[in-house]
Image 1: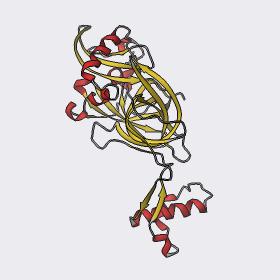
Image 2: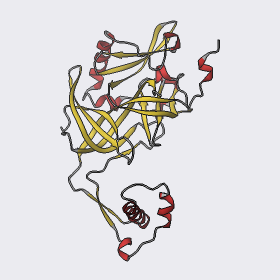
Image 3: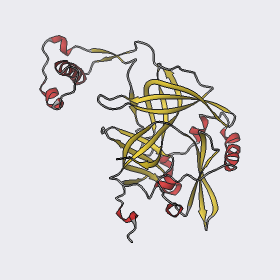
Image 4: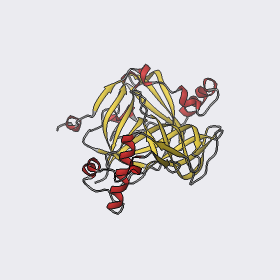
Length: 313
C-alpha cells in the first residue's frame, strides 16, 4: 500500500536562522514583569497536567520521533513546551511560549513556511479564500511540519497576544497629499458611486482610465480613520507574525493564566468588501488599559495559528 505522505506537495519552506527568528522573551513580558522568576514555575506546574496535541496527525505514528510538543495546564489559556527527544526520552528543553484557544477560524492554504528548523518553530503565510494574506506563528508546527499540503485548505484557529494597545481617538483624521494617492481615492469614490457601491469586475481598468473633472479633484483629501480596520504584518523575515492592527472590539471576556488575570478581546483585523471579516481572540494582561465592546483599538499583536483539520468540502 502506498504511503499517503508520498502524495503530499509541501509548501515552500524558507529556513530562517533562530537568531533572526527571535525568541519568546518579549512574549512572556506581556504576562510578567519578572519572567525570569515566574516562567520556570509555570512550566513545571504545566507539566503536571500536560497533554500532547496531535494537530493534523491521524495517529501517534505520524508524530515526529525526535521532539515533543507538550501543552498545559488544560485551560483555555496555557503554555506550550517544545522538548528534544532521544529514544523516547526527554533530551533537552528547546523553548516555551504562552498560547490560548480561540473560537475564530479562517479557511486558508499554507502558501509558505518560514521555519527555524533547530527549534522546530515556524511562521505560516496563510492565504485566505478571498486572496487576503495573514502571517501567524504556528503553535502546532512541531507536530504538523510534515503534514502540510500546499494544495489543501485548512481551518486555522486565530488568536493573538497584545501589548502597547490604545483606543483610537474619535474623528481622528489623516491628510492625503500624495498626488497618486489623491487620484486613487477620488477615482475609487467616483467608480463606486457609479456602480451603486459595488466593485466592478474591471475596476483596475476604470481606475487607470479615470480623469479629474475639476481642479478640486486634485486637492488634498482628509480622511476619517477612526473607524478604519487595518492589519500590517511584520517586515522582518521570520517575524511577520509580529503585527500591527487597528480594529473594532466585537466581544470581551475574562480569563486566567495561573495567578494572572487576562482580558480577552474579540477584534476584527480585516473587513474587506464581499468577504467575511477576519476576527481573532486577543489576550491582554489585566494590568493594561481596559477597552469596551464597540471601541476601536490599535497596537502590536503576536498572532498565532493552530491547525487541527482540513476545510470541510
